[in-house]
Image 1: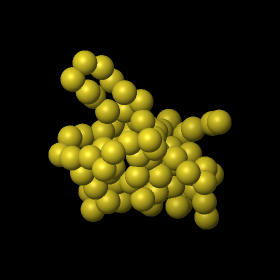
Image 2: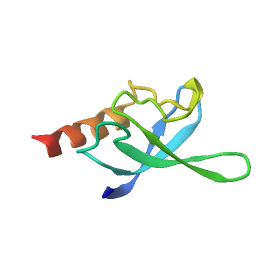
Image 3: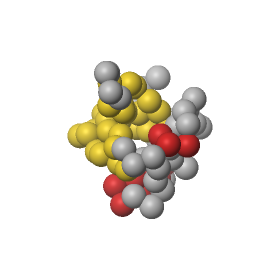
Length: 82
């Protein structure tokens, strides 16, 4: 699967921490955003859909959908679809 790599964008998560989005896939049906979360001991790769829901994650690592950076990322995905 091919992703479009972008400069890292930090987004707020519902649990109060921050994730870094480093790529997106505008043609994907799910998991449009790809990045990572820094845990206590390591960096964990994660992916999210257009609703900010993290695949195989808890509510705390879903993206806050009101986060301005996330809204910008969503707009970028939609611009590639048009």
